[in-house]
Image 1 (tube, protein in one colour):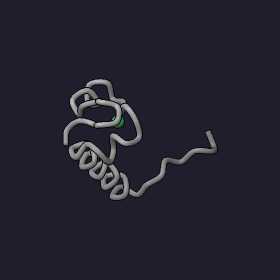
Image 2: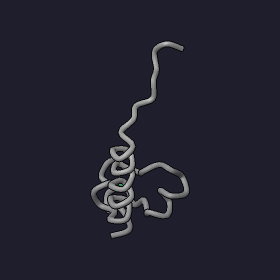
Image 3: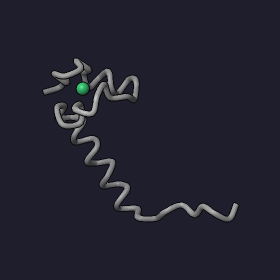
Image 4: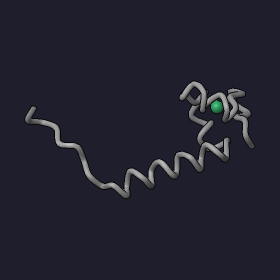
Length: 55
Ligand SMILES: [Zn+2]
């Protein structure tokens, strides 16, 4: 499914605005689910945390 049945937001709309319509979008829109998975993969892969504290 490319559109969230709960809020009616489509994957394209999310791409354009950068915002999901509701928290269900993540589990209802297949393409978004994949995109989020990729994002997490990249984050985990880098593994480095930016130093913050002594600025
Ligand atoms: Zn939604």
